[in-house]
Image 1: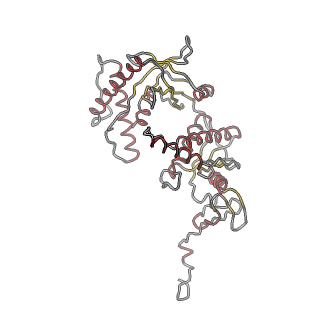
Image 2: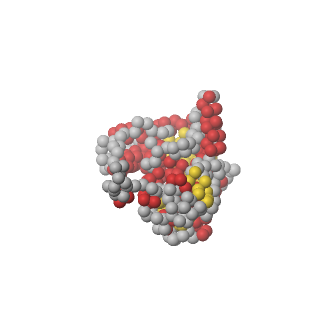
Image 3: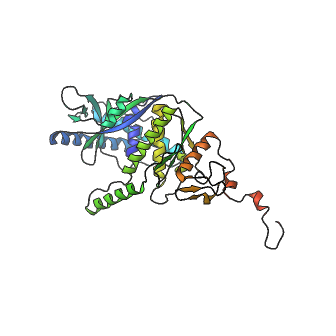
Length: 377
């Protein structure tokens, strides 16, 4: 539920048409007295939020109640509860799944971000009915501001793993995309993390996954909180997504990625599942909205088995990371071939009769199969 609360809570109040919101996390500092005060206010905020969610779950979206005399925390909790229930009902309608009442709520509250000018701290975060806590910026937030982002005054204070954190929001103007018939295809895998149609081959993800797996096992052995093994892979995929979008922006190309809807139905195979491809594609879509790059999602079937030179499709063309066409002898990296075929699908030059070229027997081909007793059936 934390993701739903984030979308329908603070960020929902600042959403605008033709604008997109990016979220960044800042650590909050303060003496033990201020920290305890803020934690007490967050607990009170969660109590108000749980009360409103419980009472208005069975009611419609038009449920209203006067919060006069209850304070700032009750007023904000009421609006967040309405947004949470509205987002849950809308998602249930779109997906067809029944929306159930949340069983738990995270420890958080809204806050106000103020830029500091009189001390070494960059920002102050004011909690409703509470003290101000200092926060320091970081490189990612500075780069976002340098790219033309506008910092929103409303933020969100949460309980982090080690300390209190503030989620601040940066607003970007959506740039109108410039469609181009020249596509840059991308293929995501584990042997080569990200391969592009221009020939770039990313690093192997096996060492990254093994290193994170060892770290997670050691933390579990010592009784620490288990960390996710996906964090390092996500950081690498974020870096590659930004590079791909930047290349398309500079060269005036469109970006072709694997379809998100298709990837969501894939089964997890090997040491990496569909989550890596989904994460990369979603990251490309988010960055492309800001930089004005067109992103096209394509069905990735047979992209790593089809020769980009003669269009011959066969499972024997690929052996691991090595691609060698059985018909014309074309040799290349299998992931680069997959990326080039994704770009060809976006451009409309990929062969459409994929099933027949893949060796799958169709109804017409079955009519010419000889029977054991002789003759043709």
